[in-house]
Each structure stands twice: as C-alpha cells, then as structure tokens.
Amino acid sequence: MHRSEIINHLVRRRGYVRYLEIGTALNETFPYISAHSRVGVDPDPRTSATFHLTSDEFFSKVAPHCAPFDIVFIDGSHERSQVLRDVENSMRFLNPFGSIVMHDCNPQSFQESSLMYLGTAWEAVVQLRAKFWQRGMDWKLNVVDTDCGCGVLTRGKPDAMPLLPEELRFEDFNSNRNELIGLISVNDFVENY
Image (cartoon, rainbow, N blue to C red; front, side, top):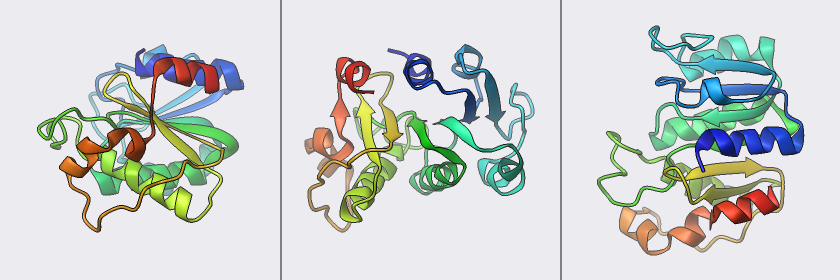
C-alpha cells in the first residue's frame, strides 16, 4: 500500500477535506491525494509546492491563516528533532479529530536509518509513543508496515510502551521494533482506521 493510499483511505473514511503536505519534493504523493483542499510546503522552488518555505517558516507565518487541517502528511526532513517539531506544529493546526501521517518510520537496517535514506524519523515515533503513554494523552500512533513505514497518528488510547534506555540505539530498535513503533499490518490499518 502506497503512502497516498493510506492518506486517501483516511480522507474517505473520515470525511477529511483539508490536506497539508510537508515535503512535496518529488511529487510522489501530493498530486494523488483526493482531499478537496490541498496545501503543499517545500523550500525547494523547483517543486510544485503551494508555499516554498521551510516547515518551521510555514507553521510560524502561514499556517495560522489557512488552518485548521484535517490531515497532515510529514515527509520533509527525516531528522528526529525536525520530525518532532513538524508533528508538534501539525498538532497545533489540526482539527480535533484530524490525523497525521509520517513517512519513512521503519528502516530495515542501520544504513537505511542514516539521513541519506530514511533518517531518524523512527526515533521521533518512539519518543512520541512514549510521551503519549507516559502522560496518558489521547493520541494513538502506529506504523503501518508498508512503503518504508507510514506512521499514523490519530485520537485514541495510546499503546503501552516498554521502558526505554536513556540512549536508544538502532540495535535496541531493531530487536524490539514491533512494540517500539507499534508496527501494524496493512489489513489491521484498513480495518481499524
């Protein structure tokens, strides 16, 4: 299942209208989304983004004037701290029952987890899941086991999380990925989301 199919499934099932995409770079997703209103953000002026800004600039300067959004797709920088900022900013401008989808959350090797490939988005997913569980927040985050791992964040009871080491290494993640990122199958996603 391609990331655009995951997003379109949520759009159809939940009646979403307003879509925001962070990181439109190669146009692999943005043109295929069925939401009525679409906004794309990418700093590269060669892309077909609606706004050629960094996501931080967009959220501080533009989002207050065109939000709220029903669904946000995050596929910009895959570095942990930027993914966390993009998620937190997206949550601020999200409708109360909106969803956030993140790409590249399930690297299969240490090499894939370098910033040249999928990056450290998986670390952001683990950190967010731990935060939601520890604080009893009404946010559920699972990663669909398809298309390099698509994180899906919606309202709901968070999954229990194991105690994390102070410094999470890829080896820790690799040996316990199902529980750490809440890995689910495509069928589970389609049935439960």
